[in-house]
Length: 166
Image 1 (tube, rainbow, N blue to C red):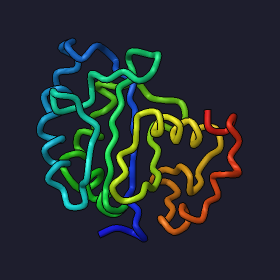
Image 2 (cartoon, rainbow, N blue to C red):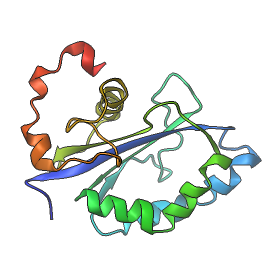
Image 3 (cartoon, rainbow, N blue to C red):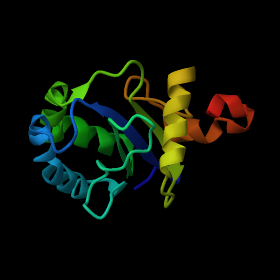
């Protein structure tokens, strides 16, 4: 299942309150495998960013070493919402203040990709930066204001200037 030949990609970032091996982070780290397995087995799941360890928590694509990144691709926004808000993932989200500091501005971005496309970390960072700078649009959005794939397909990214994508 896909919407008009597109799937939904997402990036979310978080700023650690302590290094992953600090006892403060035990509650988060101890649930990683469980939540990743749940995602992998969820309806509509296609792909997630991971290293050989099976997660992406040790990747540091930002200059700030305390920022971790999570990325995934889903068949639809409905599938992603189901996973995020109606599974055990939701309980981890409710506890996030124990492990992560609050971000100013957007920390999650959603966008559509052609079926089969695996987004790069740089592509995802660009979408999040665009959302932070320009707000919600079919190019990059959040759960607060969602768009359909057909809207994203009609969105003319050729009008974006190079500075808008940095």
